[in-house]
Length: 209
Image (cartoon, rainbow, N blue to C red; front, side, top):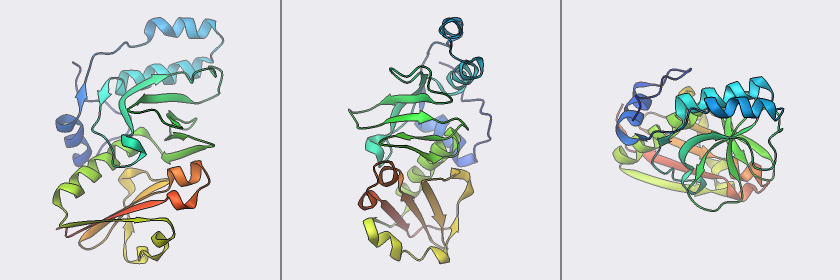
């Protein structure tokens, strides 16, 4: 076992608590041996460095399932895209829980997202994804009522009464905070497959400060 992640971006106290109490870190290769092979295969050095760095920080972290995306990656693990080792700037982010129509990837700027019909970044970093999981766990265990909304009904949510939650570094997926509730809006699959009906939001009501 290795210690809790020494991350490039600081996690909130909620995120740190989530990683240390709800996740498990298992021993995984550091990729130092593979790095030389990848360089010999013509993989750019910057790409190899990013793979090794991600694996050192996050490789082997087993996370609880997310509510959406069929649970998200079960374990974070860097790897080159199958059949596309030369794909510039992208690499696989983790092991899927079930057979799916897309994979989880890290983008050229460090984004965490899904590679569906098109590449769709969900959060600006892997830390944002971890923060979203931590927030969902926190809200679901404390809310008095959780309501799920799909498709066009999401447009009726009064987001002007809420403020965005920056810790999730939201892109396709965002979180919003109100006086006694939070809202999670996930549009990754909708954008990735160009299917607006796949948008989903969850409203967690009855939270204290």
